[in-house]
Image (cartoon, rainbow, N blue to C red):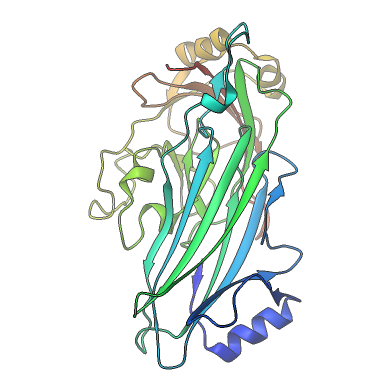
Length: 329
């Protein structure tokens, strides 16, 4: 979430959390951007323990005396593509390095303002999910001041799965208990297992590249899901600049055991063909939905309601299983 505070309050926040400014920033530049180091914050290259793990990072930018900050930008590049694929039946001649890479994704592109005018310093905290497929993701954070000076920081995360050759892809979502915050990750891409915060999708600047991939949205109460084309959704069309995807769900007769035992692409597709067309609302524990995405060649999958929200912090937990496509399809 993007947060504006006075310099004193920011420093107190940093010190109170046991954090310290990472030493990777140059001290002589007109614009400084620091990672804030603490046990819970990612501030350098690392291997992710589990696919889809929830991580957080925090950065602090400060302009030189007499200057102000103009903008802050966050991008992420996945290599290879974040979308799962089925490996060929024979690995002879298979070249992993030749796999397609994703286009650069703009996670945040913000002009910095405050009621008092352009700020001289800025604190940014984000909570995000690592990729669910094997590969790397490179995060780049760039601050710019009013004179055009820039300062950047970056880290690369690596994810390795032992089951990449399976014909299906699976992962778990741990979603927020409520989604009122602009930093709540409630806009979901089902095939890749990535959830985006509101400011990446419907922020002050529309992000059509991300909007065009969103399959389902967590509603504000944190307990219901809806396809982006659902007419009851109150999404401002001025902030949603592309056609809303029409993801379709069918409530199945499966339970948790049935979900666990469905491990081939034909069986996954059959569940969508045989279920009852349904909106994903009024969720109950251990319900299993089959879904079909709106891609030119649709992705079929299963969605298991693993845990329902409880208290003020534990949100909806979903297990997802997606039938992979072959490379190039």
